[in-house]
Length: 266
Image 1 (cartoon, rainbow, N blue to C red):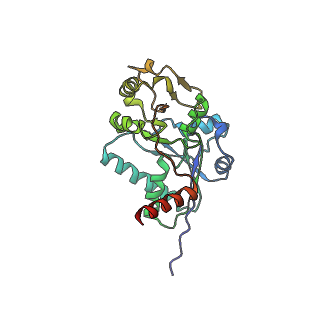
Image 2 (cartoon, rainbow, N blue to C red; image 1 turned 45 degrees about the vertical axis):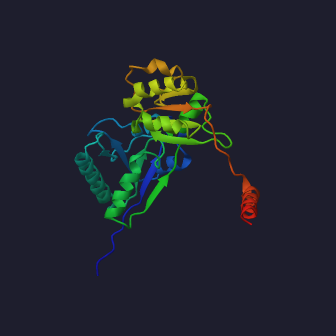
Image 3 (tube, rainbow, N blue to C red; image 1 turned 120 degrees about the vertical axis):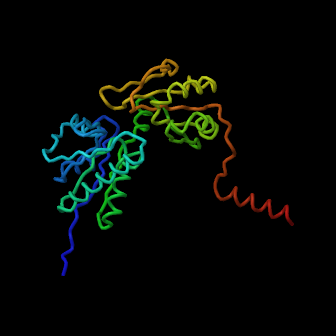
């Protein structure tokens, strides 16, 4: 009879965007639970931003912590091979029966590496248990740091990567009261020009490396033209001129609408 292999649990520990004080108690406990650490890097033996958050928090990095390489590229073949290597390495480590905690900057469920890694691991070994520990997202921390309210009452809010292009952003500015534009690095000049055209510079703010010692907040967004910004940056854009549609409030209004419609058909 074949003995059933016991796999450790894969834990995605959200660390927040940069300030170690924003690490949740649950993530803090996972880091000190005896689980083996995994942390992402763009190149082998390169520094890890996620790891630096924990180090600034005063937790010593275990000697057996393992780096997983996730290259910054759009080449599908390179990415596929990198993901396969990371998944194989993770499954092998889980096969030893010890839990693994994967360090995630920001929130593990929002534009993060962990979701993809967990999915690929589960495709290979469905019985692996996965736990995702939520955390403070970059846009939530950026809003707090810059004094921006993302949404009030019935206002609408959307989060999109800026590299969808200015045509998409231009359209969404009419659909949402506030936009969080992530991954703005390659799009800064084009987005600033759009905001100038839409007269929205005064209600926009740029935040770079929020929560880190290098945090930067720029309210004169037009000054960013021609500047090479950090990858860990975003823009919060509010459109106070947006024309909103009518809201339906509660069951009574819906019932009244049905009654009116029925009377009209009678």
